[in-house]
Length: 415
Ligand code: MRU
Image: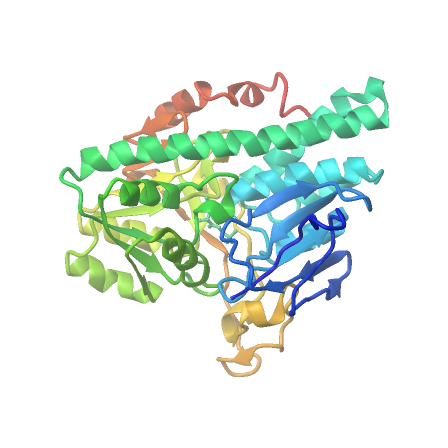
């Protein structure tokens, strides 16, 4: 596998010195990407902040290229980062929060208009609440430091972005521990066969993620018999990304077409469903990757626990009900064409893939669906487990989280 690296050269000390037989330095606006063959690293972080002599950058593991290639995208400005968010090079709720916060820090450090950058970042995708949350935290820190001048403001925005990142690492570990405990209660005896949808592991997090972190904890505890991985049409986050993470971490996994889940349930092959979330409304409704709601209906019919794992930063108490959640609509060509994302990279356009529907076919392509609270067995957060899922239970767990201040409007989230 060709592995892309952006690294500090041990000989010349330059941050962007690329070596190796195969290199890619293809530029995409202000993004550029590099590959190097033969590097065995399996620990490329999904996102990192770098400060080469040319100026600060946000470096992303390009998730559109996985699993074929591990290629990094280097964003030198906010429009490049916004493009990476829209094209899903960087994706998943917690990571979008981290990316948004670093995006504000990038604008501040490079002397761009921070308010304009924050607006563009927050609007890049509408459903994942963490994106706007991360942006607002870094922007609030930037504003609060105004008296110190631009350097102090940039430092404050970066410190806040690092805090968002660190908190996600910690939340991830806590969710894994709470989730493992819950699985033990729901399914005593181990040997779990867990079905998951989309991707919710290390690729979407500073740590090991949300739902997939729980499955990984079960695997490490010797309690995971099988991870059923929904392929997750149309962009295959399950087949491409969750399977990639499962393989790397040695989990026993099987990829299935989304439509095959029903027969798995009917055959008694699923002990629990574990998914993440992009936004949880105050009433406990859960927006997650399209295809999650049908799984919840199946799980209820077959008396299988349906568990959502998400940090309290994904709970949006200002959105009263599931029907108030804005669901992102994606371009139709993602459904009517097969475009191998890793072959085309970010920004793949209509007409560039292999047609799988007649020319001009209409497509319905919501990125997410909303599962009502009554179908959710439990919501696992870093601050504890909510079960049954009620408005009061959710508000209670949020009030005990470290981010509770931001919810009462007395600080971090202030505009
Ligand atoms: O469109 P995506 O790939 O960003 O959607 C991601 C999901 O739906 C994840 O399941 C969700 O963000 C939870 S990940 C912790």
